Image 1 (cartoon, rainbow, N blue to C red):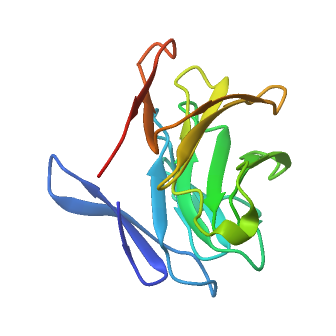
Image 2: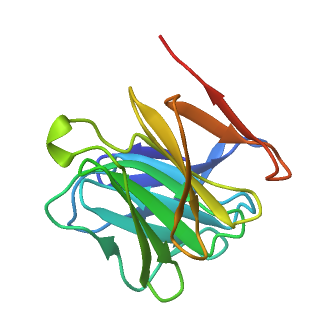
Length: 174
């Protein structure tokens, strides 16, 4: 997928052509994109909104997800496309259900909001049970998506999941 201004185009690599084009309305320019692993949804994020595009039919979700007054800095969809996560400049990650646009969790980085930084990366575990939030240059937090609880803080700002959701991989950048 490629974003240009307020438009998003989805390209098929096999035939090197655009198969869908969608405008995100009068909202801000597109800044973040994230596919669901099943390839059926595309999350589209601007400064303070997130839309979810259904790829089979090209329709946007009925209601955009919005957090006025803070900037979206990272975006992820769960493997099944039912949950969308946005990381924000206020050191919070917000988790919504795609179907109802209901905010189901807010994960707050343990740093003080005036210390600078943002949630630069959000990653949902392949099994959909956990969330990693990373705030460069400091750390990564592991959250339980069912309870909303903070489970662990890693001293490294980069992290990812193993395919079976059993391992968290962390590393330190320079």
